[in-house]
Amino acid sequence: MIRSMTSFGRAQSQEGKEICFSIEMKSVNHRYLDVNIRMPKAMLSLEEKIRRVINNTLSRGKVDVFINYKSYSKGNAEPVLNSELAKQYYNCLKEIQEQLNLVDDITTTKISKLPEVITLVEKEENLDEILNEVLPLIQTSLNSMDDMRIKEGEKLKSDILIKLNGIETYVKQIEEIANDIPENYRQKLRERLKELLTGVELDETRIAQEVAILCDKAAVDEEVVRLRSHLSQVRHTLELEEPVGRKLDFIIQEMNREANTIGSKSTNIEMTNKVINIKDIIEKIREQVQNIE
Image 1 (tube, rainbow, N blue to C red):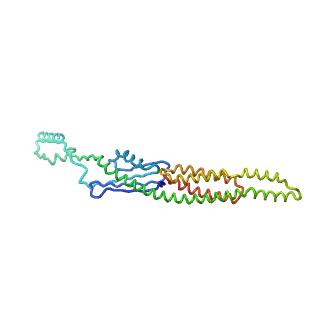
Image 2 (image 1 turned 180 degrees about the vertical axis):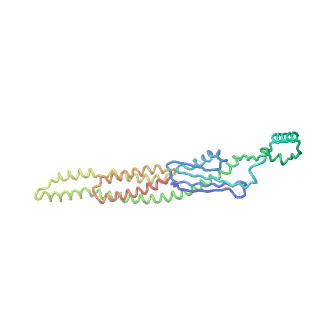
Image 3 (image 1 turned 180 degrees about the horizontal axis):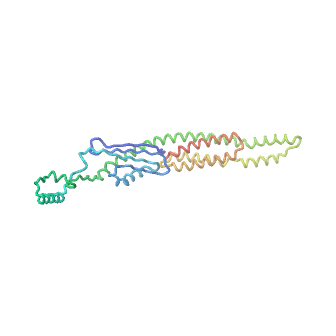
């Protein structure tokens, strides 16, 4: 099944949870699979597992993944008391009081406000819970992307098949022109020789030799056969249930090579124009193939 590399997918957690995740993915054409993941710093250790899921689903394309979350919990930090430090502060304050004969105004509130006595410590995220929440969303996004890739791929396939039919029509016309070349050249050669050699009997054997030499140089039978074979290969490849973008790209290059060879052998302006039309269609197909996975 043909898949385009241009796609988009999105998924998010159900409302009502303490932490809601949202996943967005977008991809464009690329020679290989290039995955770029942007996520909160606390989730960085999960990147490899997330990347593995994506790599198992996609084979080509430049893929950008955006993972965000909103926390609706009361807080992600808790106060922690440093009892030993509080005691040391208290002892120091008592010593100051005794040495300077000051009024005892040491209170719990004052000690609690001293540096590092009470600190806020961030709670560690439960990465297993986060992974269990995120992976289904990643898969949902990938499924959305795959649906879009298939739809776009079917459009590309239909259009490429139409273009292949157009090339086949021109190839058939080239064959007809090529079949008429020997007789047309024979007639032109005879007429030219009659003008130059008025009253001299023409040597039909010599004319036949010249015609044979030209036909051998201008013969495009092999190129036409190979071009038809490539057209058949493209149609067959479009039906395969696997990534075929690179294979199609190679076949299109070979088609262009055969078209160039036919054009270089052409001695007929009409045939040359047909070759130009074929090359124009091949270039359009090549651009489309660049976006096939």
